[in-house]
Image (cartoon, rainbow, N blue to C red; front, top):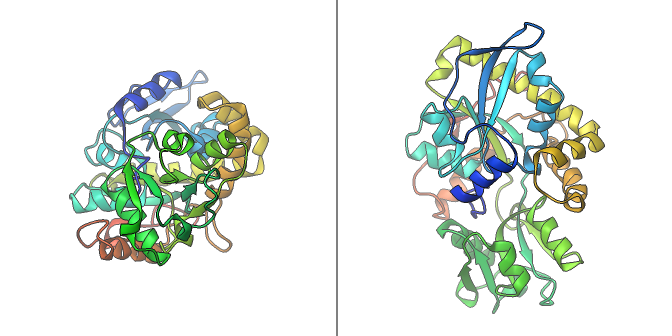
Length: 344
């Protein structure tokens, strides 16, 4: 949940560095209603997609679809954008980008701020947020963190850590909470903190495993009292969805994305090759992260690809309000829909 805890708060310098390193379009681009022409003379509709963060394994489905021509065959010329400050919901809501990758708490925050966005798909339907404990300490359970320290970033991260402790029967006051900013992994590796919130199972959990040269205790938030939720979602501009041409583009984009995601899951080696081209991670890391990322973008048994579980999202919103992680009520049915996803 990219704002919760908040590894996923946007840091401009990191995003800009990723933008340059990946050779992507200018950060914070504008939405496009123009067209492009291929060498064969085919006319494509330009579409800008704002990511939630720098290119990483979370985006394996997007980049596989892009690399293997699924968007172009659907008539779309997709240009990837990387955020500076802010999140994709803000860029899409202000009409600077056509579509964006967000996350549930980002959607809730945008809704409460009256940003005109609608969630139209779940690009990673599985929950990936985790609590990671250093294997150097001998602590093997969340309950065992009593008397130890937890690293976090942002007030939401601290609130999340406090709730996790309460859920495990630990007085939150018996734990030291350390705001380590963007250095969550480094703080854990250096021994500054015993555990961290804010990482993902397919990224930080693997980074720490490789650094420690052993499997560290990892606990997903959905196993620690949080309702299950999709890690990432696709957002569109609410006002523009009234335009039939824009609505058609959204439907076409989702259809092409799902085709690319299915192909990526069926082709782990090809997915790994794509991520090696578009991210800055080491081959050793990607060899472990790619299969885990493909697992996370695969829907649960019986669910359609990228389909939103509206009731599940409402449960999460109500939970976050009750735990004072967000302030205000969110009516998810008014803010999210499967109407543009033919798979649902």
